[in-house]
Length: 298
Length: 291
Image 1 (tube, one colour):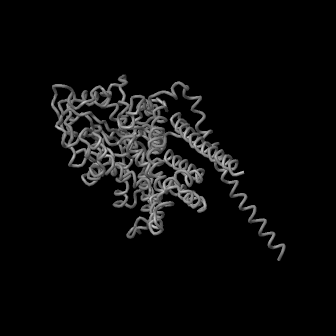
Image 2 (cartoon, rainbow over the protein chains, first blue to last red):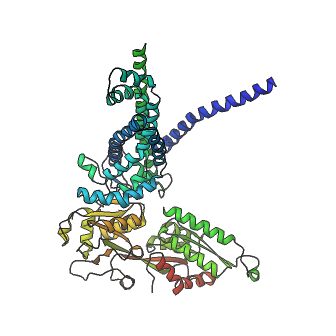
Image 3 (cartoon, chains in turn yellow, green):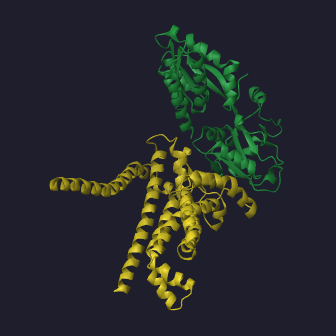
């Protein structure tokens, strides 16, 4: 009996360990694959051409700058939408809403998070883009702004879900302490609860940003996909082409092993590095704030 | 997207090919004839639809259809690995020379036509343009509808994605006016939409938009532009009649090539393709029938 138990224990421990390490192995493998398929570009396309402003792959113009600027523009826009809305919703659900409202709101927000992005894209094409065009008097409604608004909508549930959990796990004693000192409800939220939940809130925002930068289908449908290099704020109101949409639109029919194929993988690599940078920054910020919190407490 | 559709068709074909057929006992022993058909991706859906219908009517004939591009198809014909090559362009002189060197005389059959209609919003007062004007609009030289006799509105250019055969054809025939040395590009702010549906939606909704699409895909509520080959010539609206009498400028023939004059099952199949029944499928898929 004793030996059987330890034998089972051995298997289970190893299995859990293996699944833990497998995440690392998968990421490493994906990165290796991206490097293998993407790095040849550096030998095939001169660096000056790769970081040029014209993307027209069928005539061998492989300038990825317009795609980079398009992705950054849409992501920044989405963050500007998702952070205030996401935080506001999270605070409302965790701090202000009565119990019954919270029990309805939380599942609703999570349902929103499960909405397929194609559906949101259709909504964008049929409802948002035409109205934006008329309302802002733009030449076309298929713009970076449309993409930002929809992507913001996609990122909101992620932000809300994680931030609300963080706010919820702040001990009740903190709030009671603040109230006892005469702080208003708003002062309690802004100066006590939110700072205490800071690391979780930041994680939520970063996950939301990550979701926005990697989103493909929606942006492909509503941003117009014109590879124009963004040079000013006016670019928000004109069509852009993102890196994800480029890969999705062109990978299907590209000849295996061609320069175009390698360049698309190179773009995937750049995208991977950006996501990595976002995540590393997020963990670093969370880590730093934790250390400071420990210092304050000790 | 086309690839997925293609895959689905192949799967459907494979399933129908496997299904046992009742009343097939006379042809026991399997297919009597086997036709290998390869080439242009523009034609592949049409060729698949034909093959499917034909096999339904003549269960003793098996037709295998694959894409890969016009050049691939012709190369396969020259190498003797296929019976029929599909091509959305005419065979080149070098390809004919190569074939003759191997003792093959490629024979051309025009099996359908493909016309591209230029479309605008129905509220747009512009109804006719010359090829040069369309080229200037898409290359970014003309930026306002006023310059071509319309309202004072910015022009929003819509195009298919660069991997679409229609995009390349439009670039060569309209933007570059068929001139191989011409290096005109689509203006960078041309919207590249992933589907025909996207273009039609935006044109329907946006009075600033101009787009293009296969003639058969244009819905009735959009306005087609009459096109003149040059200033001073007649403006012609695209239709089956104007495509067939070659007065409409943005149209091309679609071909099938055989090695020598076709005989036997291949000849019967090619004759069937030109029959009204098969040409009806042409219309259904958005191309122009040859009669």
